[in-house]
Length: 412
Image (cartoon, rainbow, N blue to C red):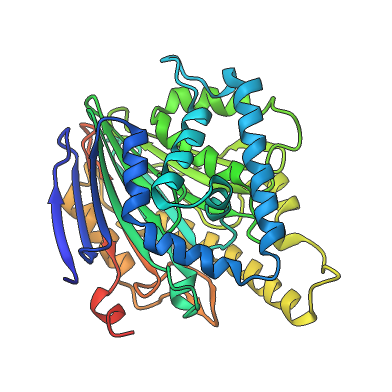
């Protein structure tokens, strides 16, 4: 059945409304442990995961990519053993080890090797963006995240393309998140955590898309969302700066919003850097944006968009990369402008309905950004899932997740 809709208050009263996902795109799992939940997720999406792996095997460089993934996995295991204190929170949990165990359980459920599973976690396509605006007077937070699917837009031959919405209830914790075939758990897209009276939202935008990613990046965004506490995440991020160089082969911009504290944090990581990104401030609001191009100048200098023309790169490909860089810069400016202008003139408390109404108008703008298969601004419904988030003055979090135009997709 297409275009199913649910309204879920979750375990702890946080409002989560999910629209547009078909019945087979929504997966609910109840388990006593994350290992059991990951095993079940692997079983439930085994078919698209195996199809995706078969699709990747057609690449002439598949064996080299698999070997690289295997080395990335071993690097994670070594770091977890030798630098466990970096990844361990006050409750004694080593979150890097939890990630490795989660990946292993998922692969067992999907019937693939852990090296194959590691390969499927590595993302190398640009296509996400985030806008966060906070009311300086009331502390309210409004956010928009678009989860884009370049395979759908380009009509890729990938048979496993498309998004899924996963709802995991693990003991007293509930985690809902967007995922794709082959992805073992949360973090690399967007999602919300509800636990012990607290709510935490995270959205990730990949950066440096011209360099093939490594497993490290996926592990980091998983760990942050698994921790789901801004103070503990800040400590972990600072500790990661002391890891042996090079730290990362690719990176993410990670946006994290904590409901009860009405706080948000944005981190960019890549190369040897883990950077805290300050919001753009005005008299009445704080604005944070993220797309697929870093904000910090040091990361811009090593970003894939700024590499000189490579020996293996044709003139046409190089020119396309330059156009994409221009598009990302334009997207950044546009997001900041939207953050400054949307709902401008309202004073005092914004209110949930007003915020979500303005956000919907922004997302329903006819000026989608897909032009000649590269992105320039806010994406349209054909390629994106839209997350609309509101945090009230009391710290209550409301999330609307909308999957774009399912009836149109069903006619493909």
